[in-house]
Image 1: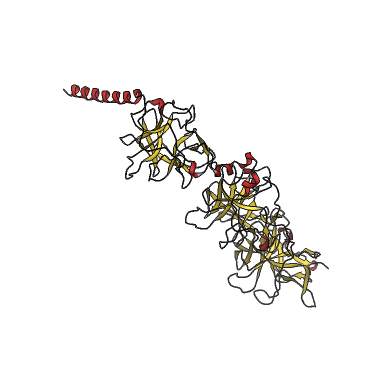
Image 2: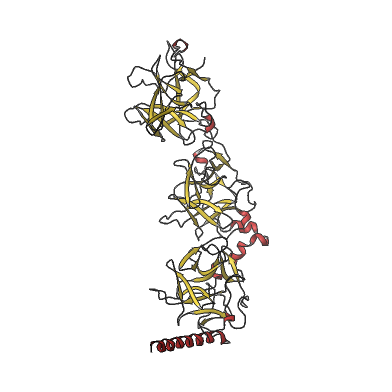
Length: 605
């Protein structure tokens, strides 16, 4: 009895499925929906193309949206998504007759009375549309040319296809959302919002003004197109006194590729400068790098990289020069410390934080120069790379500035303090050509390498603000990080602010500074005459003079046990006279060294 019931039910199901399949394959003509297929602008209409209910058209009438050789996919729209009343656009999988739609991060496979598939009556699957449409890359079409696939009165959705779906090598078909320019592809239960160089959108073949602008490079109108609709504000320096001529901020799609001004080094991927809105929770335009290959503006912010392409995106272009050529307005790449603040080209909007454009090496995983935004406040170059933001400041860092040199750009430092030398029997002597200069007011070349190991690049610095003292404390200046490390009462303090000064040459004939050994076991060879002083104040006890020294022999500990002694020189402060101590900062601690390696900085006669 149970077996009979089972067979009866199975037969009924098989019969119903056969009838549905027969209906799907044998119907000879499509039954059109009342909706007309139009463009987003509503000015263009597709003829001979219909929305047909499932089961009301033959398989060969489905318009192929997938690439030839890949599984046959069409376009569909359907209701039935939980908590959503509107029709959602998706891909129609011909093999099982389901409409797969992406929404809310998930994929929904639906087939019901509301499901409609885009078909044409007289053409077979995979043929081109008689109405004249095309697949267009992002940025190569006008908004009004996109074929509207959503219902009238509902959010505007088009059809797209793109590569980049995890686990799938081919083109995935999905819905195109004009608001953010992304192609949402449903695949194996998930929704993927993609936007890359392979993304294509179904549009009308007739080109609008925006299309002509994008293709101007091919039609001879490159110069006119490059300018596009320039931003209202001119490209000026931070000081506002210098203006870049023939250079514009152009909206994405309003200029040919060759008009982009190259910011990357020749031989590396072509990068330009851009600015855009669209960073989450940020209203301002953020400056970043423009990747010409995929047309995205990558901006670094909050420790992350944001790849954005929207209506606010602007790219720095010039009308009459090809990519990589120098600016007619006269600009240059300048190393840190080789330019004045007022000469930096302002890339941010007026009234927003001052940002420039920079490039630098040192990005983890990338050997070349990374292009990014320059923040004047801390002098760092923030580069976006593979989803992260890197704040860098090193000897390769360059900033885009005007070509006109200022006094600061040439290295004539203002607001400096003299270097004093103790002269026996006389008042303190000021050394000519050597000064204490604030961070950011000098170039790396002006910093004397006071360490014997060139790879360390250690300078001499002094800093105010060390806990427990009101006078400047001398220490080592690590050029790579721009930090002053000073030793005081057993600890090492890392300081990097306006209270730090570094010992540099200021462009005048260099005075002769030399290291003189103290030779603790042969005191008679050491003289304190002309010893360089860290400041005019006395030492902790108020009696000893404080000089500048370097020494080897810093203890090295492993797991709390003494492993050995350091063989490299470390710069520090010298306290005392005969048999004085060289205090050096190292790995968070202060070490007082008295050995034959101790040398004191003096002024040669």
